[in-house]
Amino acid sequence: MSEYKMPRGIVISGTGLWTPPEAISNEELVAAMNTYAEKYNRDNAAAIEAGEMEAKPFSSAEFIEKASGIKSRYVVSKEGIIDPERMRPYLPERGDDELSLQAEMGLKAAKLALEKANKKPEDIDAVIVSASYLQRAYPAIAIEIQGELGIDGFAFDMEVACSSATFALQRAVDTISSGSARAVLVISPELTTPQVDYTDRDSHFIFGDVAVASVVERREACNAETAWEVLGTKAKTVFSNNIRSNFGYVARAEDVDPFGAGKLFRQNGRKVFKEVCPMAAAHLENQVQEIGVEPGSIDRWWLHQANINMNNLIAKKLMGDEASIERAPIVLDTYANTASAGSVIAFNLYSDDLPVGSKGVICSFGAGYSIGSLALEKVAI
Ligand code: CO8
Image (cartoon, rainbow, N blue to C red):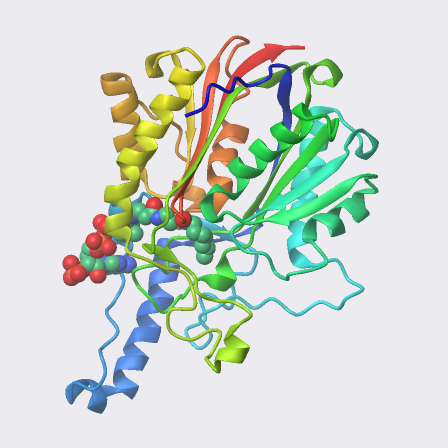
């Protein structure tokens, strides 16, 4: 790659994590899916018997925990998801004059991040909302949040699936280093549950809702006691059809059901596992080499949270026998996969304990494929 060297002096000075108040355990989710499957198989018994339809296979809480490490997930609305007659969240439509749901989630995390960074809206020049799904095309959710906070500057939305948060943090670093903004608020309101097919046992257990936010700014303007200086960033994308969501506005002109087969989240999880693990490990090795250190001297890896076995494998490749849950913390047991927010949740929950001088890496990997990382060092202000 290029000889480009990161300009120093840009920090992540605060993060915010908003967790929805409701949670669904594997057992509750499986009970709903299996009641739905039983009824489906009963109602379609003749067609299944004749080989015209496939029976719905049953899900298992034991499988879910063993295969993924997920035990529970937070959701914005639980009731509809675990109702076998509905099998999707119920989110009442809001009017144009009301705050949209994704803006509301993002705003909650943004306020927490501003508080942690000891910043006021007037200190911020730009807002980026970056998530794997956006609830509308325009006006941007980021501009809605900008308006609510009273920020004078510019705002825009972007989407890079599971790497939405890391790619947006990188855009914030670039924006500040080019002088386009003094400070940037990066927000990922991951509202995943409306795009999950809760009748599909392969994917019904994977995702949860959450919102995270970060303040990125110049070290010289930072008001926090400590911050995380950005030592380097790295982004990579390689096209793959193994994780796909075909839901989109063109469905209306294609005369197809926008919520029909293949339009919700789907993946070939096994292939993703096999292909992404070596890509992510190599990417991370390069990331730390570029900042002049060996993987062994990184104190903490805030890895993407899609699968515990994937993270253990990547951690082992990077740290060998030194790999541990303390050095590569896991949040997906309680949060599940929250698309791009997972590594930022891990950073938010597991970074305050580290002393000044510690080094860490935030990294995401997922659909696209996309891999994004930021190498950080804790600094005293
Ligand atoms: N209960 C019981 N059995 C099950 C279940 C279940 N719930 N699900 C699958 N099985 C069965 C399968 O059908 C299969 O049966 P058979 O052998 O008879 O065919 C068997 O169990 C084994 O299935 P798999 O091979 O699929 O099992 P794995 O061990 O591979 O585990 C995982 C499946 C957990 C999905 C795993 O492959 C995985 O986590 N892979 C990595 C995936 C990944 O990292 N993806 C990133 C996606 S996230 C992302 O990029 C963000 C997208 C944007 C967000 C979208 C929001 C909606």
